[in-house]
Length: 330
Image 1 (cartoon, rainbow, N blue to C red):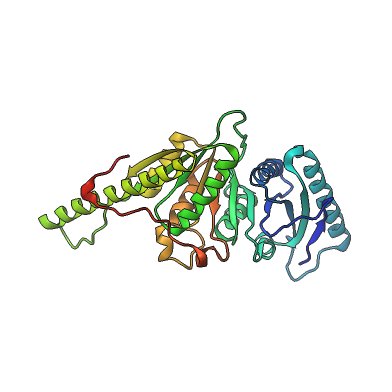
Image 2: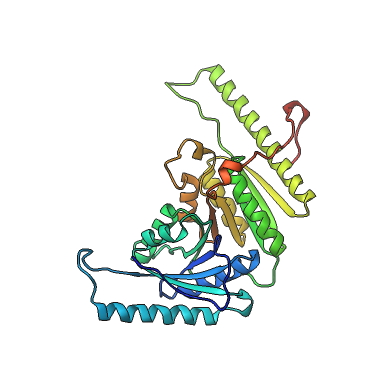
């Protein structure tokens, strides 16, 4: 596998680039525009990236003439995309690789803290090759992701709203930090969402009276702790100059989040690839809640994965002492 680069007029640091993954389809321009807008918003370098895939027998080398023509066509298409971007996009580096998308992206991001921008498949595209590749990248790529839904058009002129599901985990705090950075750049409103799941108890037959009482106490305790956490986080961000709203919901985390996000219709959802469950599933690259929302939510979603050294240096953010007897406000 060999990677080629079309240099930009000036060199720039690509240690944390925004990489727009363009496949030559009609979705490529949507992906390129979103990648350019985000890169300009957070002052990160932009790379338009294409992989020339070999669909024949892996043991057979492709026809050299056909391969040369495909390489030339890839360069021309990337150049046209770069030229079509708004002037405020800044410098753009063009790269293409050869092989398959997953291997190529894993090699490309390496030790960098890149953000991959890819086109999320629509409901009628999930079974197509492009749709499968998009979902495989979402589940397997080592970098953070920004998934662009089919037909996406940015909300021009209105104040953007960014929704952030949070659960108190270090993973979610990293997603919130990314949302804060983008909200500061765009003057966006933050919407913090937390779902309090029902307290789980092992059942071996009908519950006893004291089991029901314990479940009620657990539910009440969890709800009070969640309200305190959400309100403390909201006030902390307001004190830093952010516009913030919050929602505290109860029920199944996945369906409650999907319902709230569908009703609120934010311009962008920023969430961590894992949540509290990530502590028990270190071998999984993406948690169940994130996977469910990727499959069901039709909107712009950023999936944040920890940087290579962030978890090692991450310190919990203190939220102050908590005494349930003192009450809560939301």
